[in-house]
Image (cartoon, rainbow, N blue to C red):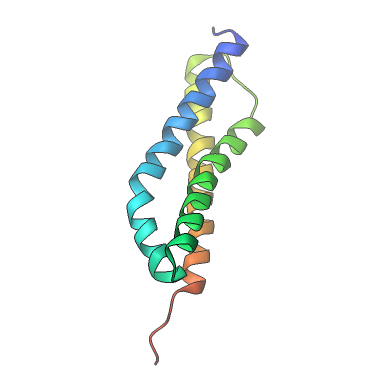
Length: 107
């Protein structure tokens, strides 16, 4: 049984680790894609940073909405579920935004 403050800190640390793993994995491809779509380096840099902030903030928000479990198994399971759903929703949002602005081949 964990103390509530320890459970909260573990939850946020695990969520940050998952989110930062997604950010590190996608930083370079996202930067290249946004450079192509945005046209200037400044715009590309802004949207890359904005996207990475959303990839961290969304899972943190989802984890914050959940109650904090003090049982270690429930804590890890709930944190992983919420964090991964948050990362997935952030990626879906970014994917839709990029897809809607991508040039299409003429049919």
